[in-house]
Amino acid sequence: MSDVLVEYSDVGGSTNTDRALEKAKIRGDELGIDTFVIATSRGVVGLQAAKYLQGKNVIIVRHVTGFKDPNVQEMPDDVRESILQLGAKVVTAAHAFGGFGRGIRKRFNTYQVDEIVAETLRVFGAGLKVAIEISVMAVDAGLVRTDKDIIAVGGGGGGADTAIVVQPSNIHTFFETKVREIICKPRAWG
Image 1: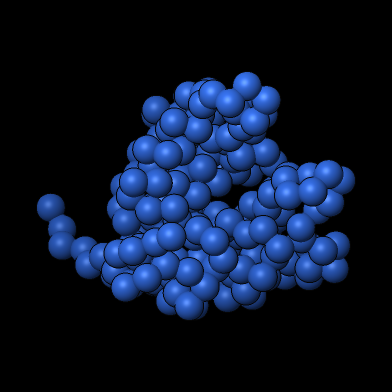
Image 2: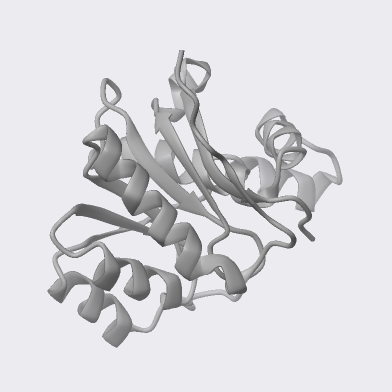
Protein backbone atom coordinates (compact mmCIF):
# COMPACT_ATOMS: atom_id res chain seq x y z
CA MET A 1 0.00 0.00 0.00
CA SER A 2 1.23 3.51 -0.74
CA ASP A 3 0.04 6.99 0.10
CA VAL A 4 -0.42 9.12 -3.00
CA LEU A 5 -1.84 12.60 -2.83
CA VAL A 6 -4.72 13.52 -5.12
CA GLU A 7 -4.99 17.21 -5.90
CA TYR A 8 -8.50 18.66 -5.96
CA SER A 9 -9.20 22.05 -7.49
CA ASP A 10 -12.23 24.03 -6.34
CA VAL A 11 -13.73 24.27 -9.83
CA GLY A 12 -13.12 22.69 -13.21
CA GLY A 13 -12.05 24.32 -16.40
CA SER A 14 -9.18 25.96 -18.22
CA THR A 15 -7.69 27.65 -15.14
CA ASN A 16 -6.46 24.18 -14.15
CA THR A 17 -4.75 23.22 -17.41
CA ASP A 18 -1.20 24.15 -16.39
CA ARG A 19 -1.50 22.39 -13.05
CA ALA A 20 -3.16 19.27 -14.51
CA LEU A 21 -0.34 18.89 -17.05
CA GLU A 22 2.27 19.51 -14.37
CA LYS A 23 0.74 16.94 -11.99
CA ALA A 24 0.42 14.44 -14.85
CA LYS A 25 4.08 14.85 -15.82
CA ILE A 26 5.29 14.57 -12.22
CA ARG A 27 3.29 11.39 -11.61
CA GLY A 28 4.32 9.94 -14.96
CA ASP A 29 7.98 10.51 -14.05
CA GLU A 30 7.45 8.91 -10.62
CA LEU A 31 5.85 5.82 -12.15
CA GLY A 32 8.08 5.61 -15.22
CA ILE A 33 5.13 6.24 -17.56
CA ASP A 34 6.00 8.20 -20.68
CA THR A 35 2.76 7.85 -22.66
CA PHE A 36 0.30 10.71 -22.24
CA VAL A 37 -3.09 10.90 -23.94
CA ILE A 38 -4.55 14.41 -23.97
CA ALA A 39 -8.04 15.58 -24.96
CA THR A 40 -8.46 18.71 -27.06
CA SER A 41 -11.10 20.16 -29.34
CA ARG A 42 -9.72 23.32 -30.94
CA GLY A 43 -6.13 22.32 -30.19
CA VAL A 44 -5.24 24.84 -27.49
CA VAL A 45 -4.70 22.22 -24.77
CA GLY A 46 -3.20 19.82 -27.29
CA LEU A 47 -0.56 22.31 -28.38
CA GLN A 48 0.17 23.28 -24.78
CA ALA A 49 0.58 19.61 -23.82
CA ALA A 50 2.77 18.84 -26.84
CA LYS A 51 5.11 21.66 -25.82
CA TYR A 52 5.13 20.85 -22.09
CA LEU A 53 5.55 17.09 -22.55
CA GLN A 54 7.99 17.27 -25.46
CA GLY A 55 10.18 14.18 -25.52
CA LYS A 56 7.39 11.98 -24.13
CA ASN A 57 5.01 9.83 -26.16
CA VAL A 58 2.17 12.35 -26.48
CA ILE A 59 -1.09 11.48 -28.21
CA ILE A 60 -3.56 14.29 -28.75
CA VAL A 61 -7.17 13.18 -29.25
CA ARG A 62 -9.47 15.61 -31.03
CA HIS A 63 -13.10 15.60 -32.10
CA VAL A 64 -14.23 13.99 -35.30
CA THR A 65 -14.76 16.36 -38.23
CA GLY A 66 -18.40 17.43 -38.18
CA PHE A 67 -18.76 17.15 -34.40
CA LYS A 68 -20.19 20.65 -34.04
CA ASP A 69 -21.00 21.59 -37.64
CA PRO A 70 -21.10 19.43 -40.79
CA ASN A 71 -17.75 19.20 -42.60
CA VAL A 72 -15.97 21.41 -40.05
CA GLN A 73 -12.89 20.36 -38.07
CA GLU A 74 -12.63 22.37 -34.85
CA MET A 75 -8.83 22.16 -34.75
CA PRO A 76 -7.25 24.38 -37.41
CA ASP A 77 -4.75 22.69 -39.73
CA ASP A 78 -1.90 24.96 -38.62
CA VAL A 79 -2.42 23.95 -34.97
CA ARG A 80 -2.43 20.27 -35.94
CA GLU A 81 0.81 20.78 -37.89
CA SER A 82 2.41 22.56 -34.91
CA ILE A 83 1.47 19.65 -32.64
CA LEU A 84 2.93 17.15 -35.11
CA GLN A 85 6.14 19.20 -35.46
CA LEU A 86 6.59 18.95 -31.68
CA GLY A 87 6.63 15.15 -32.03
CA ALA A 88 3.12 14.42 -30.75
CA LYS A 89 0.58 12.30 -32.61
CA VAL A 90 -3.01 13.37 -33.37
CA VAL A 91 -6.01 11.05 -33.27
CA THR A 92 -9.26 12.14 -34.92
CA ALA A 93 -12.11 9.88 -33.89
CA ALA A 94 -15.76 9.70 -32.93
CA HIS A 95 -16.38 9.66 -29.21
CA ALA A 96 -16.16 6.14 -27.84
CA PHE A 97 -19.17 6.82 -25.60
CA GLY A 98 -21.44 8.60 -28.02
CA GLY A 99 -20.82 8.12 -31.71
CA PHE A 100 -23.57 5.99 -33.16
CA GLY A 101 -25.60 6.06 -29.93
CA ARG A 102 -25.75 9.86 -30.07
CA GLY A 103 -27.17 9.59 -33.58
CA ILE A 104 -29.89 7.24 -32.34
CA ARG A 105 -30.70 9.59 -29.44
CA LYS A 106 -30.99 12.58 -31.75
CA ARG A 107 -33.15 10.70 -34.24
CA PHE A 108 -35.37 8.63 -31.92
CA ASN A 109 -35.09 10.58 -28.65
CA THR A 110 -33.83 7.59 -26.67
CA TYR A 111 -30.53 6.88 -24.93
CA GLN A 112 -28.23 4.02 -25.80
CA VAL A 113 -25.83 2.07 -23.61
CA ASP A 114 -22.74 4.09 -24.61
CA GLU A 115 -24.33 7.36 -23.50
CA ILE A 116 -25.52 5.79 -20.25
CA VAL A 117 -21.93 4.73 -19.55
CA ALA A 118 -20.79 8.29 -20.31
CA GLU A 119 -23.38 9.81 -17.97
CA THR A 120 -22.40 7.35 -15.22
CA LEU A 121 -18.72 8.29 -15.54
CA ARG A 122 -19.65 11.99 -15.42
CA VAL A 123 -20.81 11.41 -11.84
CA PHE A 124 -17.08 11.42 -11.04
CA GLY A 125 -16.50 14.50 -13.19
CA ALA A 126 -16.64 15.43 -16.85
CA GLY A 127 -12.84 15.36 -17.08
CA LEU A 128 -12.64 11.83 -15.69
CA LYS A 129 -15.17 10.62 -18.25
CA VAL A 130 -13.16 12.32 -21.02
CA ALA A 131 -9.84 10.91 -19.79
CA ILE A 132 -11.18 7.36 -19.81
CA GLU A 133 -12.87 7.84 -23.18
CA ILE A 134 -9.79 9.24 -24.96
CA SER A 135 -7.62 6.43 -23.59
CA VAL A 136 -9.99 3.95 -25.25
CA MET A 137 -9.98 5.98 -28.47
CA ALA A 138 -6.16 5.98 -28.51
CA VAL A 139 -6.13 2.19 -28.07
CA ASP A 140 -8.61 1.78 -30.91
CA ALA A 141 -6.38 3.98 -33.09
CA GLY A 142 -3.46 1.62 -32.41
CA LEU A 143 -1.34 4.23 -30.62
CA VAL A 144 -1.63 2.88 -27.07
CA ARG A 145 -1.23 -0.67 -25.78
CA THR A 146 -3.76 -2.42 -23.56
CA ASP A 147 -1.11 -4.03 -21.35
CA LYS A 148 0.59 -0.83 -20.13
CA ASP A 149 -0.49 2.04 -17.92
CA ILE A 150 -0.71 5.52 -19.40
CA ILE A 151 -1.55 8.99 -18.13
CA ALA A 152 -4.77 10.44 -19.59
CA VAL A 153 -5.74 14.11 -19.23
CA GLY A 154 -9.22 15.47 -19.88
CA GLY A 155 -11.60 18.24 -18.97
CA GLY A 156 -15.10 19.42 -19.56
CA GLY A 157 -16.08 22.59 -21.32
CA GLY A 158 -12.65 24.06 -22.01
CA GLY A 159 -9.20 23.28 -20.71
CA ALA A 160 -7.84 20.29 -18.84
CA ASP A 161 -8.64 19.70 -15.18
CA THR A 162 -8.37 15.95 -14.62
CA ALA A 163 -5.48 13.50 -14.91
CA ILE A 164 -5.54 9.76 -14.25
CA VAL A 165 -3.32 6.72 -14.47
CA VAL A 166 -5.19 4.13 -16.51
CA GLN A 167 -4.63 0.81 -18.20
CA PRO A 168 -6.96 1.25 -21.17
CA SER A 169 -8.75 -1.27 -23.30
CA ASN A 170 -10.44 -1.27 -26.67
CA ILE A 171 -14.03 -0.06 -26.79
CA HIS A 172 -15.29 -3.59 -27.49
CA THR A 173 -13.56 -4.80 -24.28
CA PHE A 174 -14.20 -1.57 -22.35
CA PHE A 175 -14.88 -3.22 -19.01
CA GLU A 176 -11.29 -4.46 -18.92
CA THR A 177 -10.18 -0.80 -18.55
CA LYS A 178 -8.60 -0.15 -15.16
CA VAL A 179 -8.33 3.30 -13.60
CA ARG A 180 -5.26 2.90 -11.40
CA GLU A 181 -5.08 6.37 -9.88
CA ILE A 182 -6.72 9.76 -9.94
CA ILE A 183 -3.91 12.32 -10.06
CA CYS A 184 -6.06 15.46 -9.96
CA LYS A 185 -9.64 16.51 -10.57
CA PRO A 186 -12.00 19.34 -9.68
CA ARG A 187 -14.36 19.12 -6.72
CA ALA A 188 -17.03 20.90 -8.76
CA TRP A 189 -17.69 20.89 -12.51
CA GLY A 190 -20.35 22.17 -14.85
